[in-house]
Each structure stands twice: as structure tokens, then as C-alpha cells.
Image 1 (cartoon, rainbow, N blue to C red):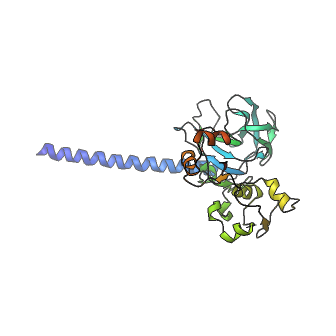
Image 2 (cartoon, rainbow, N blue to C red):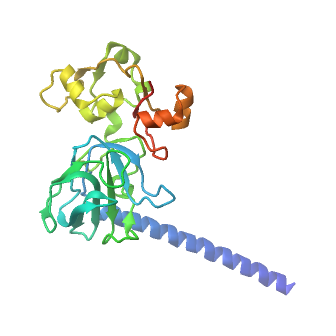
Image 3 (cartoon, helix red, strand yellow):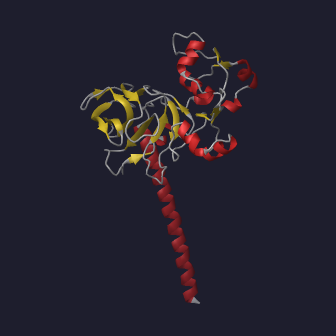
Length: 297
């Protein structure tokens, strides 16, 4: 009986220790998160575009954030620092590494071209290069990494960029040179949620935070087409500005919705999946994202 009592006390002790350790671990994790946020609180986002992949995907091997955009779009330094590498890599393509004053390092990969050299001092918001599709890349995008300390081949110092800029999600528009890049609250949402009369009339009302790039992606058009249609001489927009939009979703195209897969689209559009992949120059294993426009006919 004494043995049973001692056994129960021991179990209670183990449970108490476990709860205490969980409490300490959670507090340590929160402190670590607060530390990263504090160290990088003044950083601004490096590029305008749409999130196409997040940190930790591909079985945990993806140690950065991918932002899809137009080839040639400017890519900026998130903070003041020094260029420690600027070269053409087999994997990263044209890539720039920046070491910042707080000891962090950031990586800007798959660039079309680089505008800075090794050992050059750069200011926050200074253009480092142009968004591209070089190296091991399946589409035009910026692969952006944050490291708390120096970059290493094993990337053990990598941290999730969402811990710097706030939680985002694939398919979300992001804006360059902003501390809060997710200012897409004014964006009308997916094409399916646009006001019916607006689509019917071919008119888009500009909301706060919208850009021509983001609007062009909603309608499957290029920035140049919208500017030409509206005789715009500048890409600067005003809230409540009315933009004439040519016919939405031209015949033979499909605008990707949340939850779509290449397989589901091929079935719904009655097109062979291999043909769908070929027409859109896709990798069958690559991700598709909401508002992406695919050729189906």
C-alpha cells in the first residue's frame, strides 16, 4: 500500500515537471519570436507580387518565402547593410546576400540581374536587382530568406519571414518597401468575388493599397494592357479611381480558385493534364495559386 502511494506521488511529480517544462518551452518560444520581431521591426518588404510558397514546405526543406511577380520588377534591400555576396549560382541563379547591422543576413535569389557588388554598402529600400527566373526556378519569382546570424549551407540559422512581416498565406498580394506588406485588405479578393456589375461593365474601382500589378493579376492581364486601355501615363493610382478593364477572363483561359489543383482543373475544363502543363509551361510538381491565369484552350 505504501508502495502504491509512493508510485502515485511519483506520477504526480512527473506530471508537474512535464507541465513546468512545457510552460518554459512555450515562454522560450514566445521570447524568441518577440526577439526576432524586435530585431527586425523597422524592416520593409523586398518586392511587390504574390506569395507563391511559404517557409517550411517541401518536407521542411524550403527555408524561405517565394514571391511571384513580373520579370524585371525591382527588388529592394529590407534594411541597411553590406553586400557580402553577389554572383550567379547554379541553384540560386543571380543572387545577392546582405549582412545587416543587427547581425542578420538576407538572401535575394533567382534575380534576372544584379545591381550591386560585393562589399558595397546599401541603404534600406535600395534596389538590389530585378525579379527573374534564373537558377533552379520554375517561374518568375523572388526567393527570399532571413537568417538570424550568417547564412550557412545547412541553413540552421534560417527563420520564417512571416515572423518578421506578419502571417501571410499563399495567394496573398504583398507590397514592396512596406513594413506591413499585406496591405491587400483593399483588394477586391478573388475574381469570383468581384462585384457582378463591375465585371459586367468592365470597370474596376481602385481600393486603398491596390497597385496596377495586383489589379492586372486579378484580371489575367498585363500592366501595359491596363495602362493602354486607360491612357495612363503613370502607374500611380488614386483611391476610387475607375479603370476600364477589357473583357474579364478571355476565352480559352481559366483563373485559378482557392483549392484548385492541376488535376481538378484538367477534369473540369476537359483537357488532358499533360496538355494543361505543356500549354502553360508548368512543372507538374510546382504549385499553382489563386488568381493565376492558365491557358485551357
